[in-house]
Length: 214
Length: 291
Image (tube, rainbow over the protein chains, first blue to last red):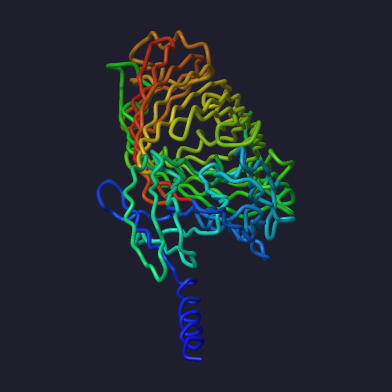
């Protein structure tokens, strides 16, 4: 009985620990400043981890003639809805190979959801307001997180094993990544330094009166 | 050619526009304010009465947008502009009129070219009433981006102006090109070029004689069009209407002050080859805000 109790106790302590394995990723630029809107993700090198798309669609809102959020990481098979909270119509589109689509001019809730069924980067735009841009990063792994303003992303719920850690950002100049071992009860911080291209977006500010589209 | 009843006509057009805006998005307001220095407001030839003028100008624009199809938008609205010439009160002005523009984007994405067709009309009241006019213009435009930071904008215009005095009436056709180069999200550099062919008004310094006011430069008689003495300026002038071609070139810089606001600093040189060649240099500094 003592052995059984010890084994049970060990099992009970191991289960939550297994679910709590976390890799904390701090992404910085060349100057050491934190990088927001980077997606850190882990790809299992032992066996592919199944992905489970959420039941409810993910929202990417249009407000003040901008997309929000700027970067949305999702897993393959996720549906995304694009509600327009502006008083002006938007024409959301993507010509990215991972997902080509367009939602013609609308206000309010769009007519339906868009299924993102291929891995890759999908660049979103509005065909009326050229400065509007956002990114959907479609992943084939369930282990990912987006960095906040402090540059950190916590990837949780990791089973022990070997992984490849990679970081993606819309302005990433070169691919970065490394292999790492996640052990039982492990909580490790990985610092990733990335090189970012200059932020070249289409200017929104007007230089003449008149209609606010370009 | 007299703009009798011009204000009612503009109001009628405005009402029609108001009807057209039904089921459209808007209204969207934008405003501008600028200070303008023109070094040859008299359009005089060198040594013949060249006078500069400083003008403060402010304007407001309201638009409604309506989708025609996936790639075409109809914009309609009204524009009002008030100008205060601190140098010559006769050039104080107030303009008000409707705008309609059809804009089509040929494809998806920021690199797709955009085509536009527009109509505009203005009733303009001047401090010197004989300058007051009704003008109309049609415009065709084309814009093309070459990447995120370079954009070429071309336009062609045809217009006519009916003033209280025939001297200030006439027509024109013009073409313009602007190259916008965005160094980053804040700084925009502009290169501006244009050509205009049509009626111009050149002012010649005048003197009183027993036969009335006559131009000091008798070459002014080469203008075949109508003429009249004007008291707009600080000294006597005779205004002549003629036809001429004008070439313009300039540059500008526009720092953004935010998503909706920017400063616009421009210099444009206008070189007109009328009977006598005259040059205008126009420097402006202003702010534009979209609400």
